[in-house]
Image 1: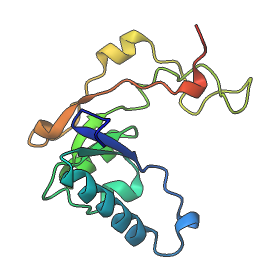
Image 2: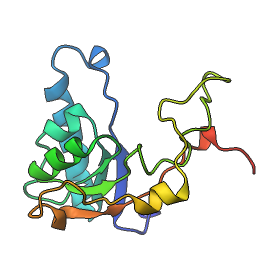
Image 3: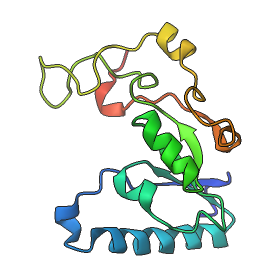
Image 4: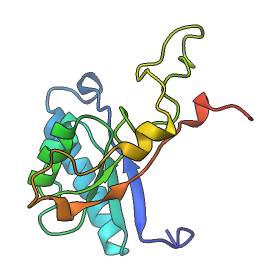
Length: 155
C-alpha cells in the first residue's frame, strides 16, 4: 500500500454473479468486502466500490467509516446507496461514459450496451444531484467521466 500515496483504493466489486458464489451470495460478499474495507481503513485508505444490486444493499461498515460507492447505473441506485450511508462518486453510464456509441469491442459491427454516443454537451449538462433528496446531496463527493481501455484506440 505504500506505493499508492493517495487516500483511496478502488476495490471494484460490481457485477457480482450469484452462480459463482453459491446460495449464500449476499452474506459471502458482505464478509469479503468487510474484510477488505477494514484492511483499508487500518492503513488510512478510503475504499471505493462500484455500485450493483448486492453492494448497495450490503452493510459493510459504511455507518462507521467512509466508504465511497461509484455509481454507474440509475439515479435510483445512487439515492438508495446514499440512504444506506454510502458516499457517492457518480459515473452514470447514460451520461458520463466516453466509450458509449462507438460500437461493441466484443462484437465488431454491433452496437454497444450503452449507445448512443455521449457528446461533451450531454456530459456538461448532466447534473449529479438531479432528483436526489436535498438532505442526501452532501454525501455526493463528485463525478467521474469514464472510458474503458479496451474500447479506445491509439488516436
